[in-house]
Each structure stands twice: as structure tokens, then as C-alpha cells.
Amino acid sequence: MRIHENFLLRAIVTPDQHQWVASPMAGVERVMLDRVGEEKARATSFVRYAPDSHFPRHLHPGGEEIFVLTGTFSDEYGHYPAGWYLRNPPSSSHQPFSVEGATIFVKLWQMQPSDSHSVRIDTSDPAAWQRQAGREVCPLFKDDKEQVCLQRLAPGQTLFAESPNSAELLVLEGSVVMGDQTCERGSWIRLPEGDLPQIAANAAGATVYLKTGHLTQTALTAVTALSALKA
Image (cartoon, rainbow, N blue to C red; front, side, top):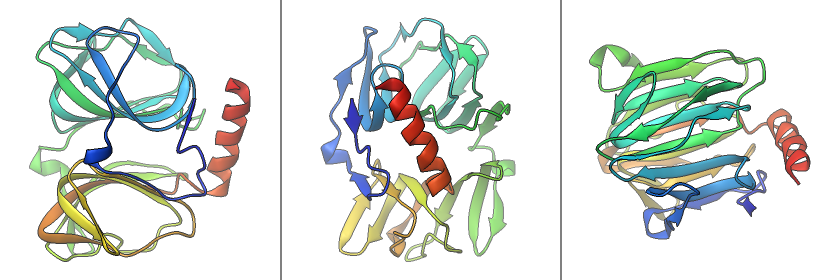
């Protein structure tokens, strides 16, 4: 399966384009944002758990990154309400479920094999935030390949304080303007290397998940190799 598989091209999915499809487990649905592979895939998705739904224990050979959007997401290691950021490193495993129901943003098979960091951050904790370059930033993860954070933008404030080599963002609150397009809450935007338009918060401001540095040529080479492996 291939969805927005050309990482040299800009990709945008707005809330009116969300198409929920059933997963192999009853009560768990997904919106596939980008994907290379079948059930075991390099993938970026929204995943929605109905109350009292679960997935069986499974391994994440390429790692897993999660941001909890609504409800409470759980596994055997803890319960994570909306606003929690999780990283499960390559070769980790877990058995996820939700008692009350939850919606999460998930990225699979997108970590370096050497990444051994397990991360749990409650972004609703004021202590997790700091002031950087005239904006509020919640750092989530950083290594020599990528940087992940949340940013709160004031009305009209531009997103990129510095120009990254590539970027991916999810609008968590408010909306952003990119050229003549307004991207509301729930919009996902992927910007490849060399394609960085001006993006600014709309009149009410915005909060965004922002990931940079992971769509360089080095990363794309790894994606190509994974695609060939799964073909």
C-alpha cells in the first residue's frame, strides 16, 4: 500500500479529507496520512480507539512515536491522557488499549536503528514548556537526525523561527495560513527538503506539533530501502 509515498512532494491532509478505515482489530480505526507497506509499514496515521478496544501485544522493529489527541491511551506501562507524547524505540513492544476511548497521532518505522530512547512527556505540564525565539516551545525529542517539539504561536506569528531543511506539522489548536490555504485544527502538512513556504498562525493563534530534519536525502534513502524490503 502506498499513500503519499513520494517524500519529495508536499503533502497536505485537512480534516474534511479524513477517511476512517477499519484496522484488523474491532473498534480501532485509522486515517492513513502517508504509508509505504501493508500492515507492517512505514506509516503516519491517526488512530481512533473505541471505548474498551485494544490491540494485541506487538513488536515495533522500526520504533513508534505517539501524540495523544483525545481521551486516554493506555498500555501495560501506563495511562496517557490527551497531551502526552510517547516514543517507543526500535525493537520495543507493548499491548495498547483504551478504556474510555482515544484518538492518537502515530508514526511507525521512522526511527534510527540506534535510537534507544523511551520518552514520556506530559505536554499539559507548564514545566515542560519554555520560551524560545519569541514563542512558547515544548521540546519533545532531539538527536542529530531530527527535532520534535510543540509550538504555541501568537496571532500572525510565523512558524519557522529558523529555516529547517524539511518539516512536518500537525495543527493541534487554532489554524495556520500557508499561502492562500487555511489549515484548521487536525490538518497534517509534510514539507520536503527545499519546500518551506511561509506558515503563520491565523487570527486566534495556533498550537502545532512540529518535526524537522527527518526528510533529508539520508532519511529518504532509508525509506526507499524499507520500501524495497516490504515490496
